[in-house]
Image (cartoon, rainbow, N blue to C red; front, side, top):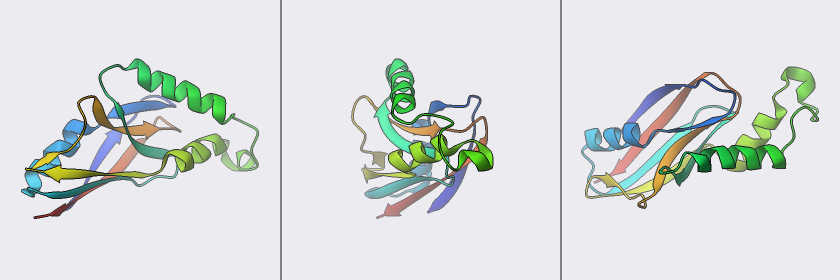
Length: 133
């Protein structure tokens, strides 16, 4: 089963927990055991798994990436000024695959699936593919 979800972001950089939406899709699929792939269909957004209990970890992660990749110094900036967002998305990656067991995502206690917006605000499309028995 494959479906898309749309997420509207409201900031230039933010992490949005999409775990509940993805879990709902896994349940809807009826698959008991398998894999769930979550894929951002954008070059300036990423999918990550991180802590979802303390929102400060999201802010800390954004701050760390901004220290790692500066804004406004890249060749691509001459085109549209968002090279840093492309580089950050490349580092983080567009997708995550999570095991499904007994019809549920096998995430750790503090883990959540996050859409990582790097060049917002925008409307983002995320493909969710659930495979298995």
